[in-house]
Amino acid sequence: MRFLLAALNALVACFVWSAADAITDSGGWRRGDDALVGPCTIERRAFSELSVSEFARAYMDSRPVVLSGLPLNAVFRAMTAKEELLDAFGDTVVTLSSANTFSYDKRDVLLRSYISNLQPQREEASGAETWYLFGDHNLTTWGRFLAHYEQHGRPFFAQRGDAVSLSFGISSAGTGVPFHVHGPAFSETVWGRKRWLLYAPAKKPAFDPDETTLLWTRRASAPLDCTVAAGEAIYIPHMWWHATLNADESVFISSFVNWASRPAEDLR
Image (cartoon, rainbow, N blue to C red; front, side, top):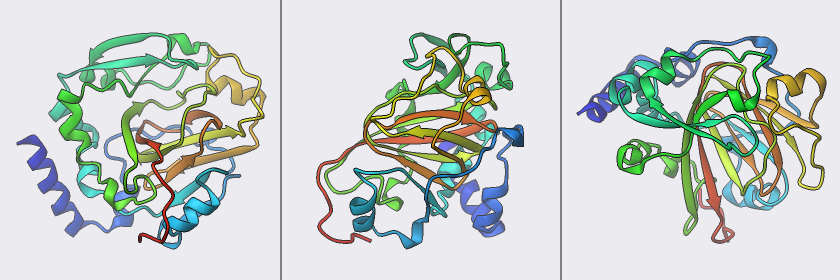
């Protein structure tokens, strides 16, 4: 019933707000410090102007790209507004990860407790002392929720035969994950702003796996740097070094992709 109500509310919102209005709404999540937003040195492409075949040719195996102007996913966006999320899942146990490079430790808490205790990152705290919600989902609980994320409206994220794993997250301003690598992935910002710092695979940055990204940015900079706002996504190719820094309380979802094939034609 809660999912149905969220969907109905979202449909009503579509008639009341324009897509641009919805993107600028905060969803009840608190804005952070604008000083956490850096310059954008990553190519930004309009979603509507980039074909699937061009994406495969120009970015899939070679370089990151920020996709702007994503189609508004009204239902999922409404479901992830703070009060809607608390109403539907506030008393659900979630698994938090420590905010260091390999997320060594885990901790189980109620989602309501995690959200109510979101605070800006303390500069003196280490990654091992900082906790965030990302991944480790119990699909019995979260499966129907994640199913509302409309990947079919984002053809770069999932093409025919691709295997995709979804990870949903919520983080407070100033938090983030130090540099790490994994397979190819898209990360869409649903609410707030999320900054990304990247290095090519062969150029591993100097970093302490327990030092927060906030502290790292106080003394260093990355060759590729961009803040991804609500309604945008970043694509990170296979094994590119990247760190994150949330400029606001942020809600985001990542699609980890195992490419099955290259598209022979433009599918869109």
